[in-house]
Image (cartoon, helix red, strand yellow):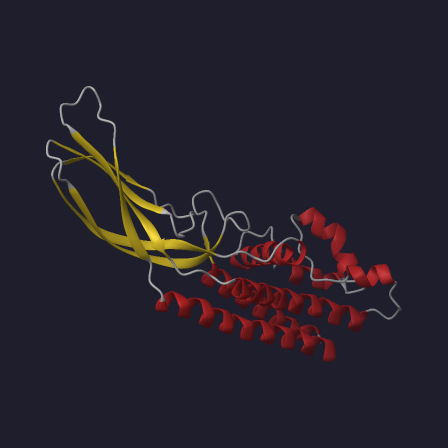
Length: 274
């Protein structure tokens, strides 16, 4: 069972990288807090309003912790270790059942199947699992990206992330707004308009706008104070991973845990084949 043991070793490596990633990123977020500034600028008075003094007050992010590129590289290593563990499983099964020497092309094709639909799976599973009995194909089909299940979602995410890291760019990570709360106090006028800029799928970074207030009054001395607390959480940008229009932000921590659990389930259940 050497090949199958290798799959578990690769999985365990992914777990170690995962712990290190959480320690680095979450630790940094706890240490450094988001800080804010307020900018003020004049606003052109509408001709239809008698109030003389109009100003715009914008609260924006002055400082926010960043996810270092080294941690994004580590994130890619987490993802690749988990995907490799599944590919090692596929190779171990082929090594067990195939009694002939594979061609170089056949060797390159051996991998854990990840198909976009059922017909693609049926057409290609035999090439990815050479000589593995067809009665075992149903096991692998349970974990296909097209399945509307938690495991299907996990493998779909794993495939998208590993393809990004392997073939395109270092997997990017952003800080998304988790929750925000605050109080607004003002004087010298009335609030005409309030605009909130935070969106679930938008990255929180230095210079990002939080809220804008338009104040109008008849005295030149106006003021606006905004007491704000904003919590951020690591997420994948929608350019890399997007779950749905209603839920565009995909949080990193629960997503990686879901991927980890699915891979562990595959490997644990696959013991029956050896």
